[in-house]
Length: 310
Image (cartoon, rainbow, N blue to C red; front, side, top):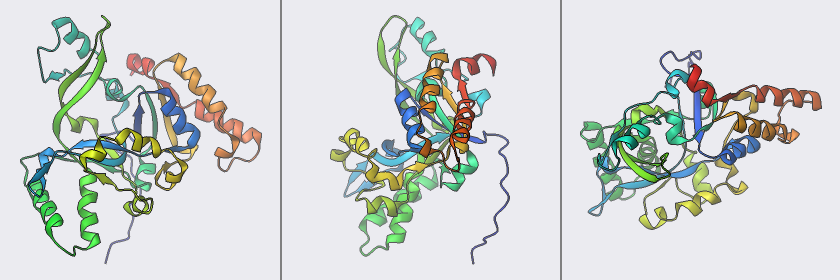
C-alpha cells in the first residue's frame, strides 16, 4: 500500500526556492501575465545518446510538449562561464573575448522572466530533469526497453505511457548548442559550443498525457515531417482550445518578474496596470485589485542592477 504521509514543505538549501522561466521577448512575458498562464510548446530534444531505434532507423531528434524552468540562485544567475567552442576558429581573439563576457543564463535564454515558488511547481507536477550520460547502464537499459515497446504486440497502455513519460523528462548531461550572437562590429553569427546541461538546473512541465490525447495531440513527436512544421504547431497551442493543458497560476504565487533594464520595467508596469480586473481572484472591489497590482509591480527586478549588485 502506498504511503500517503506527506512531509512538511522544506526550503531548498543548495538551490533556489523559486522556479524561473526565461523568455527573450517582452511580448512573451506580457502574454504570460495577461493570460495568467504559461502555454506549453513543442521543443526539440536530442535523443541520439539513447540510441532509440525503430525498424533499423535511429531517432536523433524528438519534440516534447513542455514548459521549462530553472532553479538557479540569484548569485549564480548572472555568473559568466568560459565557453568551449565546437569550432575554435569560428571567432577571432577579440570576438572570443566579447563572447566570453556575455555568457550568463539570461544571455542564452532571454532577459525577461517570471519566477514562481517551488512549492507551486511541485503542486503543478513540475519535475527536475533526469540528466543521462550516453555510456551509462541507465541509457542502455532504456534503449532496450524502448525497442521492446515498439516490437511487442498488445502492449498495455500503462507500460507504454510510463516509458514515454520517462523520455519526456530525460536530457543528455552534455551536448552542444547553438547561440545567435551579435558582436559590437555588427556581425551576427550562430556560434556552436559545448554545454554541460546540468548547469541549467532544469525543471520541466509536461501536460497530463490524457489531457493531451483528448485534444488529439501527442506529448512526443518523432516524425521528421512533423518536426519540420513545429513553428505553426506551436503557434496553434496559444488558442483557447488548448487551455486545458496550459500551466496556470495566481498572481500571488509570483515571486519575481525579471526585466533587462529600467525602460523594460516601465513597459511591464504599464502591462500590469492594464490587466483586466477579472484576472485577480479573491480581490473584491477596485481598491483591493489596485493593491494587488501594486504588489505585483513591487516584484519586478532589473537584471542590469542584479548583475552589478548581487
